[in-house]
Structures are given as C-alpha cells and as structure tokens.
Length: 282
Image 1 (spheres, helix red, strand yellow):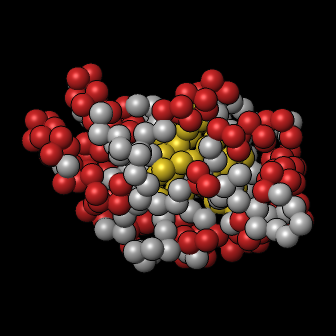
Image 2: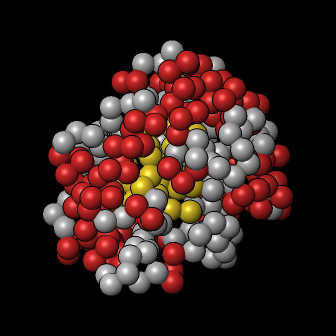
Image 3: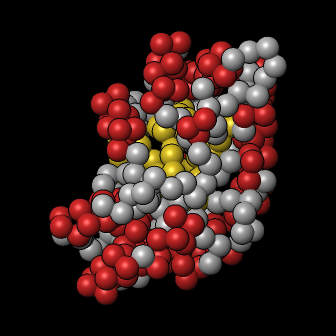
C-alpha cells in the first residue's frame, strides 16, 4: 500500500502531516516486526512515540531497518512533564534524538499540561518549557512543535505568554469523547487537532451503533471508528502491535460514510475518558 493513499493535513507553518499514523506505547508491549510491517508493507509514514513509552531506541532501529528514508517519515515525539523547564526540556529533546538516532523530530509535543515543579505555577512552567521548544523549533531540531492533552484555558494562557502558537494539539478523541469546543477553538486558532485512542481502548468496538455501521459498510468496527475520526478531519493515530490489525487500520481511505451515519456516531458522546483526564489541571 503506497503512502500516497493517506492524505495530509497542512500545519500553520506549511508542513504536511499524514492524517493517519501509528501510535506506539509502553502499554501492551512493543513489536519490532509490527513497526517494520507498518513501514514496509502498509505504507505508514507517520509514527508517534514519546520518551514516556520507553521504546525510543527500538523504534529508531526499526525505522532504519525498514529502509524508508528519514525524509519520507513523519516522526512525532513528546516531552514528559518530569523534564519540563527551559534547560531540562532542551536537553531531553536532544537526548531523545540521540536515543532514536535522528537529527530532528518532525513534531515535538509537551506531553501534559501539569508542570510538576516546586515554587512555580503550572502556567509558569508551561511558558518556560514552551520557550525552550520555540528555540528548538528555530534551530530546526523540531520542524513543528505542539502540545498534548491541553484544554482551551491552557492554550489561552500559552497564547498570552508566548509568541508562537502550537502547531498541533494531540488529545483523546473517539465516539465517546468528542471535545467539540476544543476542536473548534483549535481550528479557529490554526492549531491542527490530533486524536489518540480512536477505538476508546476497545470500548467502542462493541457499541451497537458501531456494529450496525460495520455491517452496513462491510468493514470492521475498528475501521468504522478510525474512519469516523479521519472523516471529521482529525489526524488519527491508532495503536497496535499486531501486523494484521495495523493492516486493517490502514484500510480506511477507500470508503466514506454517509452524513447520517457520521451524525449517528456523533451522538455517542458521553464524556468518558479512557486515558488521562486533564480537566483538573489549572
């Protein structure tokens, strides 16, 4: 499957991120063979990882063994909040580059809005950290910079405190968690909205509405969930360590759901989080 089948979304700085990527995680293990299969056989060119996941070195090895040129890949990494602060953030990014054996990241994200530093407010820590990311961006170490799990108040504060808005905000997004106000805010501000956990960690796969549409379109429940996310214009990064599941997840560009079916899935929102809930972070 050629990578050209995956459309791209343009960031505010003109770079283009593939709308479908492959997430990696420390949970559920790490599969070298699955990464190679995704890159070599499925046309995946967008890989999402984080220092927190503990698989940077293995992932870097797999990327090199795949034979796919670095320039053809979109590689996202994330800064863990234990490494926030100006000096620590810059060093952590460079260390992550070193572990992965790359000279730059296509996208580098602040992983979480909470600062975890004594004597400073979360807002102060976020602003100080973001200034480090802006410098990494200016230096070309990060081709784009962004945040993850940030809500509107967090983004508003960053807008007031810093000179460059995030290019991307990566947030939990699935049929049960549809933060419409946040999506709208990001689009108004030119921030690309990216969604993780598109299957709600499997909870959505048995939903009657999802099952009904899977039967209607001759697709799997996972494909319905991923297609719904992508068809809403959301950059989507399902995770899997199984080759057959990655293949399945990548086969979502050759069908389109009707408006009424998209609307039916839109009504499933109940506000549940299957991952982190950032609403308590000030």
